[in-house]
Length: 199
Image (cartoon, rainbow, N blue to C red; front, side):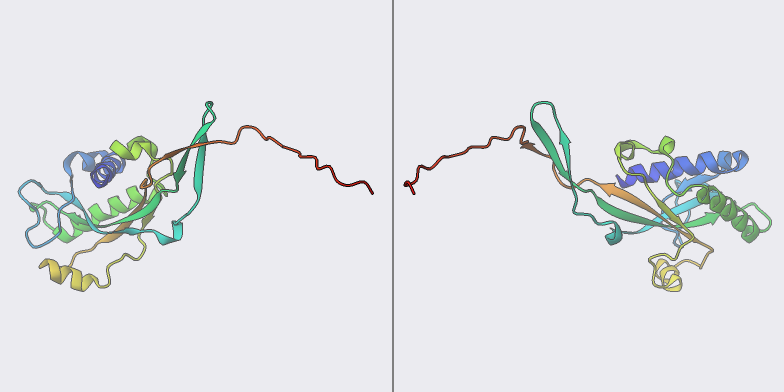
């Protein structure tokens, strides 16, 4: 599921970034530490580092859904668990540019424009298991992230602080197994007459 989300976001960025940039930039999911870029990544790159996954308690639901069948049974399923996947997005310019910080900011600006176009992930870029989700995948861009301190984050990674943006996608995860139950298809009323004593 998470790898499908990664592929979905890479597909979205490749589609929405300016064509010339989309052709040359690589989308990475590596840690933006002092070893970035890893050998598998060529610059320029947009890095989406998944740093937090947690349940979205605001969207928690205890509803049960019945899918009725023609044979007098129904499939009973519980609500999916809603999960927030939070990414820290950074831009990594080519090492051959004259002003790396200017190029980094331009890359990040193009990413911001691309991601702000949508409040939910478009269905036509969904990959793998995400295509089967009944619920849309809402996103939150440029909102405060789950990191307590960006300074401590960069220090822990051993890297230099960089301009970064937070991006959160809310997924629906089916955890309850569907249960087949019998439906009440007719009502039967039974009356019992009681013979009492004459008055």
